Length: 159
Image (cartoon, rainbow, N blue to C red; front, side):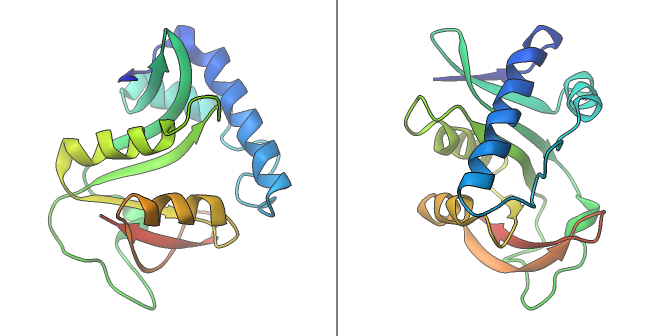
């Protein structure tokens, strides 16, 4: 597998991955985290333009996609019912999903992101048990709860 920055020509494949992820979430008890339209295409286009969206490829097929950026994430400034493991500079991963066709693609992405900075934060919905298990399997520790821009509560993890 290989990680590279997403390009505009990847947009259709990326949006298809997110569409499939929303279906998967609904089928696995998590209908609310991404609803029926998150992330919107304009957000993904902006992530591509800013250079913060990455794809994981295998044999030139896009098997996973994720947002990765180093620096302060405003939603992580306040944490409730716990605390972050440290205050060191960190990277964040958001909007990660995989095709499900290549075993370990999401773990590969998380490990790549961690290798970039050595301190990684991520959050997920309390109903996203699949993601929670993936994070724990990849060495992330539950740290507390944060609130995203729309007021939704998320479980916060750090590695």
